[in-house]
Amino acid sequence: MANFKDMAERARRAAEERNASRNQQLDDERIERNRVAEAAVNILKVNVIPLLEAAKAEFATTGVESRIVTDFAGREPSVLFQCLGPERRSDKWRFEAPGAFFASDGEYIKIGLGDKGVDRGPSKGSIASVLPMNAEEGITGAIEKALEAYYKALDEHRHNLTR
Image (tube, rainbow, N blue to C red; front, side, top):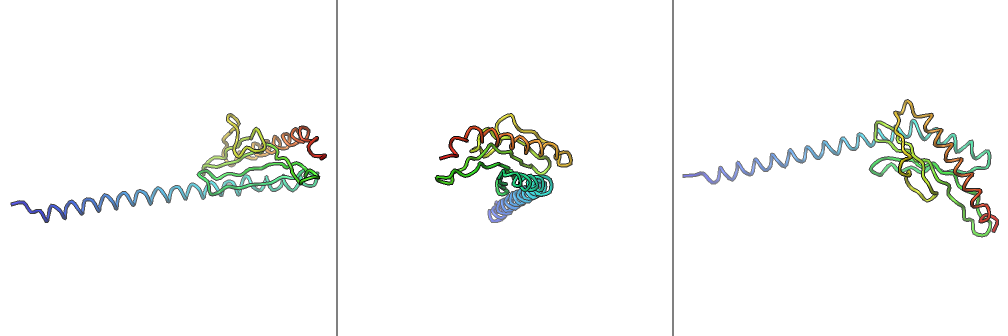
């Protein structure tokens, strides 16, 4: 006669082993995602943010205000560098110039530019990927493009700033 109790115990053990294996796989994937995210944040903090902070400080001495916005909680950690127009006298409104975007996947730095001040990510076709050790030229080039976009936007918004 068949031993149904043994059959049930074998099936239960097999299910527990599958669940343990699946849980271990999920834990391993989570650990790897966290490792990659930490590496990406570190790449941005070491290679990108110091250059952005230097640009922000030096631009301020010439009257150009800018901001650095970090998003380290998203799927791909990123940083936005954006120049800000002067405040309008009547209501303190200020325009936001198109920004330079920097992101990392833990191995490369992605560099892109926005088309409009309201963009919160790079426009299609404006993204380049570089290794961190080769990134300074690309980062400074993107900062320069953001500054050029600021002056273009300043010309476009000049009539709005005098109200």
